[in-house]
Each structure stands twice: as structure tokens, then as C-alpha cells.
Image (cartoon, rainbow, N blue to C red; front, side, top):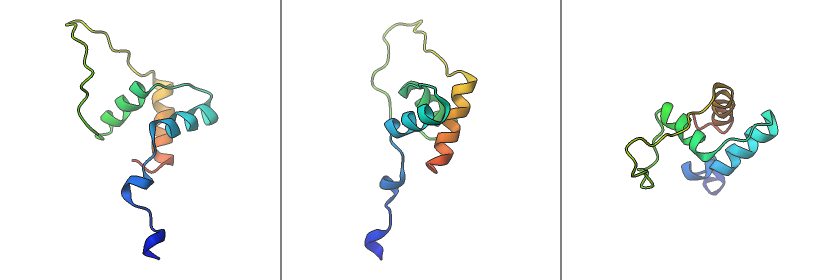
Length: 81
């Protein structure tokens, strides 16, 4: 029976799975940036981002509220939060 148990890594959803879930359920396309912002907001920090802009006034788009709610639902669906 131990062989059938899921490991922690297998139970986590990938960004592509989250994007597909949100698209199928809500008809919204979300980016990996938006998913990462919501995960960070929930306290889930996976690793450091090395792809940081060198500009001092870099503008990062923020996730709209309707997409934030859809991503939160997907994270709950996949039991990430």
C-alpha cells in the first residue's frame, strides 16, 4: 500500500495545470506571473526569482481581482492551500 501513496511533490499542481483549470472553469487566461503573485500572497514562496528587471522603475502588472479569485479557487481545488 505504501507504493500507492502520493508523495508531497506528486500532489502539487503545476502552473500549466492551474492555468488549464482556470481556463476550463472560468474562461480566463492567467499568466504564471499572476499565479506566482497569488501564491506569494498566500505565503507560498518556492524559490528566488533571478529574472529581475535592471530598471529602477520597472512596472509589474498586478493580478486583477476576478483572476485572483479564480486562481485561489484553483489552488484550493489542487489542495495547495
